Length: 328
Image (cartoon, rainbow, N blue to C red):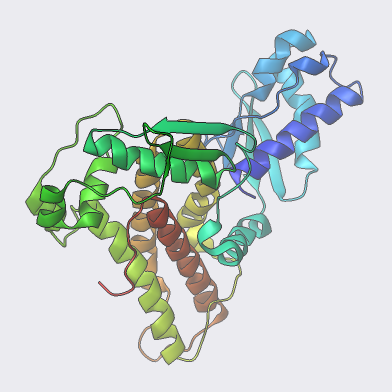
């Protein structure tokens, strides 16, 4: 279950509680969307929501009473293992193992479009052609992000002509570090931050170079698939007890894409790709059998997770207009 799906589940539960009379609030108080996020320090579960605190005043009940009404109903939903109440009325939600495993299947089925959705369907955005180079690159990616969430978005010349998505960095930087590194240098900082263009670092093939880590992690995912085929096995979706962190990052990806689109912030996607890459690079060492070890179900399940992470990296880089090489 992705954060977006969990949000919709909580909204359905709230509406059901209101319709059944368990919560007495006006219909226009029921939110169209509910924010779910990683629990704060001290909180449990996979995700947390403060929806009970927001409904308490309208319901005329203490927040923890509202949370208890919702807790029982959310716990009965498919894909939910446990719901607990913490603090003044936060709902801490733990997904069941099968629900987490299904994230891998969903990624592999959707391929590069995983995380794309219709959250912004019906909304339209026209951007004037930017004169400053970084603004052109950022606008190019913002249009891609908005389209990934169902919006109609385009860049228009001063004369009204719609421009294609082909923005490239300025020639001097492109010649020094290449198109991909130049785009990353302009997209990775938040829009209000000034990019720090360090040519040597952008060219360096080492861990400190974030773009190198992201592309290397994708290349490693492809290498793992090739090596597994040589050993006679393929990835298979199943439980991966040691893959919790990476599974969580993949589950978060649709929400990150939607947030990056809503806030027109490509840097949010770039940071997400860094996190997925780092998670995959830490996880990769247990994917293939060692020595005379025979491939097992655990190896097949780990490989499927690694392949799903690589799929997310490739799709994210594509939205940024950056190539994802299979060999690096």
